[in-house]
Length: 342
Image (cartoon, rainbow, N blue to C red; front, side):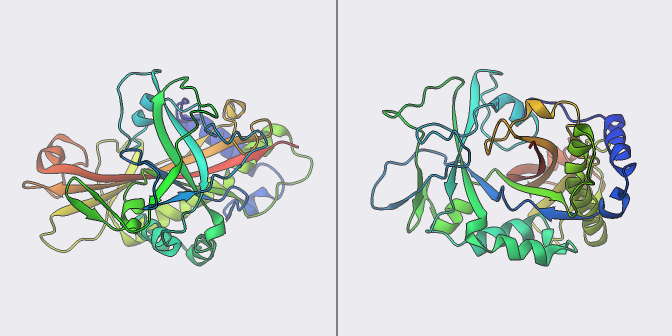
């Protein structure tokens, strides 16, 4: 799903106009709801594949689609170079088409606390400032609503067989030591999540009798509503700052103590991606023949270590900013929607 360019503003405006022109849509288009069937996803990428032992919990895989193969990944079409080009914090090989980011679904591990993990997400992306945060929080605190997408990077076309299956999800029961750093099991899991996925729907069903094209556009209205709510929350609570990609993104600085050694930036597209024309090229693993991605919003969170004199008006990721900082941890929140065919 990451092989496609973001939608041009003119096409975005077309999709929005198409939906708002339908009877009854203007009233409900500003509201969003959680797509509970798709769950909330933590994408987990271990720095190295551990050897199974009693020190690890082997987390069961979850068959999310009708054709799920226990030995194979659920998602196989993500070119590593392409997804890195979108800003995802993954170890790139800089060989377009040669490496794939494979993903397979697993249960949320028993060895870690779901309340801690989800609170770190909502607080880190300032989702706790959304007007609908209580509803979102009540969904996220339930372990059954969470899934892990274990990531595995390998050459494109890598064979997965019963004799050499997809690597298991192994979670340390008590903690880890890597390069001299001691991690608790919770910190290890939460510290190796390059991206997260939340799926939304419009709060109300589509009007009866609309066309397939209108249904696709309607399905993305939940993402558009969430985007508006998120920008409103950020504008009310965070400091807007200039950025290198100001034409396409908004930048917000998180509060910090005076003299803090780090600065944290949230970067939000000015418009989400709406796939009104190429949605059939974006099948979802839940049912590749019936379920397709229709909209996507990528929210970026970047931590930077301040290493020099950082001018307050230096555009984020511009030359002056880069000269005074060192990139730290980064994470992406995907907010998507799907269209389901009968």
